[in-house]
Structures are given as C-alpha cells and as structure tokens.
Image (cartoon, rainbow, N blue to C red; front, side, top):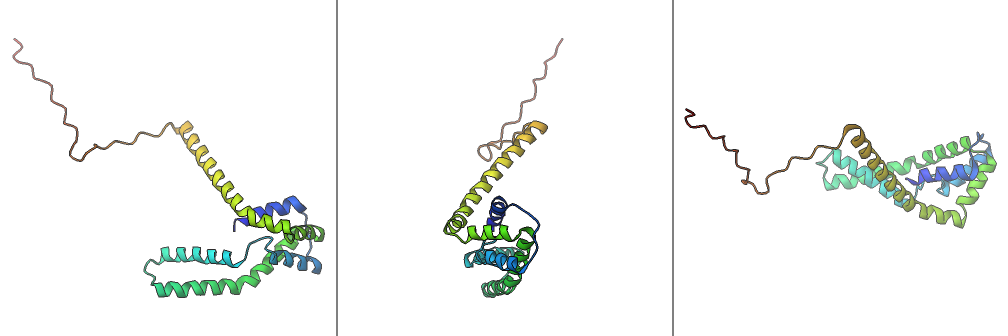
Length: 181
C-alpha cells in the first residue's frame, strides 16, 4: 500500500495537478487507471497482506480466539473487503477525475499501461521501503541529537553487580580516636 505515495508523486510529476471535471471520457479513463493499479495495488497479494494485518490486530485485541474462529474470521474479512472493492474503485476513479483533466489522465494511463510503467510499478515498492527505513533512521538520529543538545546527555544507567551476591562491602566506619589527653 505504500506504493500509493509513490504513485501520487509520479502522477504529479508526469501530469501536474489541475482541477478536472468528471466528463464521461474522464471517468472511463480514470477507471482504466484504477484497473491498471495505477493508484493502489488492489491485487490478490495485497489483499492477502491486508487481511493478514487485520487478523494480527484482531488476535491482539482478542487473544482467546480459537483457530476455527480465526479461520472463519479471515474468510469473512476477505469476503467483506472484496464486497466493498467496487465502491472503493469508484471512489478512487472519482478522486482521479477531480484532480486531473482528460489530457493528464491520458498521459498517466499511457504510462501505467505501458511495459515501462509495469516495470516501475514492480520495482518501486522495495525502493520505497528502503527510502522509508532510511528516513526513519535519519529522523531518529536527528531526534536523539536534538534531545542531547537541549537536555544534555542521557544519564548513565546504574550498573548492577557482576555476580548476584557480590555486592560491594559497606564502607568501614572511621576509626574512633583513643583518649586524646
């Protein structure tokens, strides 16, 4: 699903944004783009991943779910998603026709429907994943640096004795002076 961001960026680069209407030709062209998975990858593998992710969430919220319930739930989630897919595709088609005019839609469809477009759609998800991981690492480093700059270095964690029972001996009391006369 991360391909959504890249696809949006490619749409903007290829066509530029302009207010578009929703004339019949634009709707048909936008629908072709949706079917070519030019906005979202709505293929079987993606649906499996979405269902799996949702199952993990449900299992976390309902840890006592039985294997039989999990199997039925997985099938029901998939069925419900598939039942809503036509409405989702229609919504995405509308989003495209609102954002782009006929010429822009044609330019984008020419791209996503081409051999090169297919190759890019296949290769971009790993590039995006690596890019997101790099951005996350960079952000974490920047936050850690900012915290150290503003709040000082983190206090050292207390060290535990190396071996349980090897606690340091208590300090001896200072010797009492003998009769000072």
